[in-house]
Image (cartoon, rainbow, N blue to C red; front, side, top):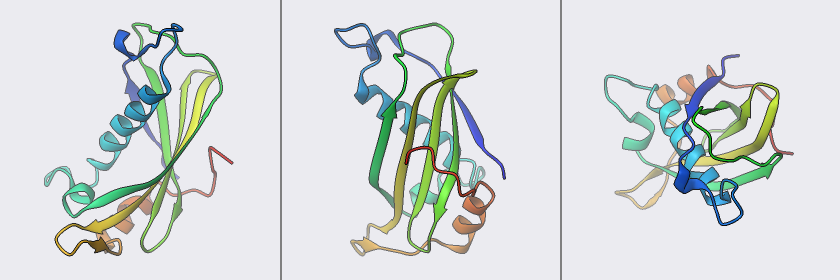
Length: 140
């Protein structure tokens, strides 16, 4: 199956007092990568999954190596590890070649903001996510 790759820049302000990338910055990196990934769902319409409504249900991050500021971006590789009728799990590996800095997982659910309740994935959303689906989980 296909995987999506996002070259994520490391900003000087991402580091904490200990000189390493702060854990909160990792959530921002994952968000940037996820938005880049999902915007490919309907490039002519922009943000199909976001426009129709979605919420983050869960995040998991396992830190593997210290990441410090550098001029080169890190690669965030992502794929769909679980796809249900009302949730999608996206797994990530934050890496530079063989060096893995973190593995992570985000579970998202489609949400109808006007009705104020969860909704099911549309057929188009399901077809998009199926192209990136594989059973491998980055975080156990």
